[in-house]
Length: 346
Image 1 (cartoon, rainbow, N blue to C red):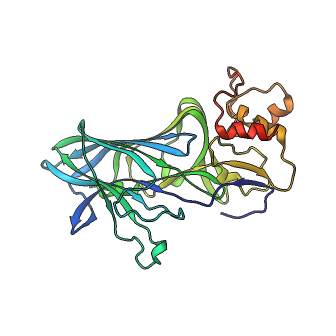
Image 2 (cartoon, rainbow, N blue to C red):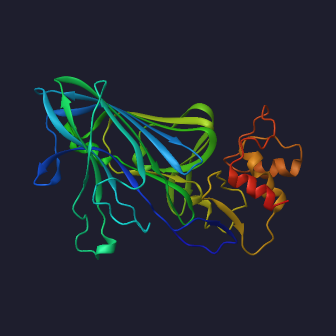
Image 3 (cartoon, one colour):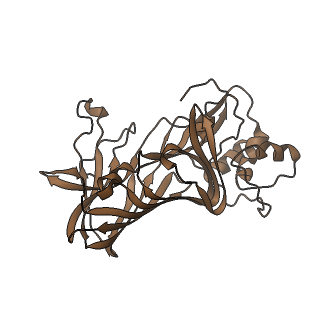
């Protein structure tokens, strides 16, 4: 990304916490879990759902259908998550990721137990303080011949970084360790209930189908910035879906806050990106803070139709603004950060 001088600064801590991943297969070698290429079991379908919130956490729900063309057998499966980077946390030898909780797994309607493992260093030649590891949530999966269903959920703390209010990574490539190296029928759902979210996705991963708004208020468009193309999405109490048959992942992806497009753009207007989460702060470095504009951002974010023409024109130029004639202005659902913002701008 190019770095441009800009008076508008979106101030986010320079911190990347965690990356979450798809499920893969393993075999045990000594005390280690080694990735395995499965030859009998294919991913018939996967429904992957992200639920975005304002508390800095994301819930992930994954529902698989596997087709075992061979005899019944038990396979060791593992959910992978890389160790936090630049967070100051010590590596946990018990294999429990410090920013993942509420992990559950069911198979064919039965709850399965799991064990935590820590992988050997991914980069063993790096200095000890810079080494990365995989935290693995491993479980024995008894596959019947034919169709088997695996369902798991977890919650993890969003990553963030300079100019990025939130980063939600997901690894698709482990799906290629299953038979056929593809997902027969893949559905991605991203939903933002009781909030509004403005984010981007990489175009290259999601070729061959379009994102569609399936619930609530939402917009989708392709955006060019920094020499790259992005799928830009804005939701308010809404959801989008991407569906593809015969999906063969070619890369992993991140759901990244849309300040990626505006944080270092010297032509960006105050409010081009707005998020309710506590990590996001708006500051105007070399000009007086436009209090009237900033004070009305929370209302615009909820769809308020402004009676004042100058405010209506100002917010209408932003992609995330979706007017809702039924919205009655109220501070009852304002986040603590938004409440503080209003007090500071009185």
